[in-house]
Length: 465
Image (tube, rainbow, N blue to C red):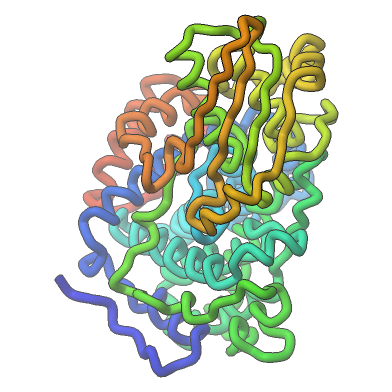
């Protein structure tokens, strides 16, 4: 198999730019092509479902009010828009309900920043083949995941949201590849994207703005690539500059710049991208997996529980252990106690458990406040970055039994993957909320055979309402 040629002696920014610019379909392993198509299905399902959500409705209405004719689909909506506005909307939609894909080592959900931007650019330009789109998406995943891995966990503990800060690189690389940017132009696309990095983790405790982080990242990278094509220049050493560079400014004690280019073109990070079985923050999932397995094994219900203690890593506790108040779906989806209470009460956790009524349900609120404790466990911290989502669930039943279940890797992770069939079922369930089943069928077939498609605008046509 051929490999991608990169100039490893160059700076990291130039090396990643060269990789993204020079990447070709024929050098991407078949397994990676198969996986990127699964990522496409997953993200399209998430984005279509979001069309009826209030934050997406507000954003679409604002885009319409601003005017500007366009030829790019806003997924699940009745009108088209400009390429940057469509990237903004579709990127927001892809991350709109905490259900999008997840790359554990980089702390990002690459699909919702990469796929909406690449597809918007392809619709805007026209004549982009399925193979070219797949190549562009892989370029975005490979660049962004490496930047996220180089930042490490300290970036999160400083209060930054990787989705908003790393995201512009994903979309810039993907759109730059769609536009066939030369390596030097790609340097400036990444260098312009870097200056648009933003996103605060306080957004997780309420409000709608967390969903916008992906949308702005998709829009920012798209804008950066379009400007670079016209000769606009950015920071040529954006990642590694000692003063004001991305890693130096936004990083911390866990920065490892070697991860920016390690294995580039040989180790495909898109293959390490997993999917979500529940529409909640990923670190919560091992607790939910543990609860469901215990319920299946011992046959108890929420009414049988006297006391529940969820032990997690410090990272998960900081991320999801805030006191729950029913201020909106975001807070509910990011809160471990609410998600666990819902699973114990209903025996499952889907999109229907985060409606306005569900997040304020009196019985759920009473249950989580009276019976659930969330504790940070230093022993679990010893599992390191790879085990940062690990948890141990202890449940004391009214009959005196004490049940314990430790789960290190969540369902949907690299170590405990969802099958393609499971992701396909998830896609169909989400997409049919917005578009007719027969169109869902056609969309599924198109993605399955995307490498045979001469113009991916056919995909966009199926995504309109």
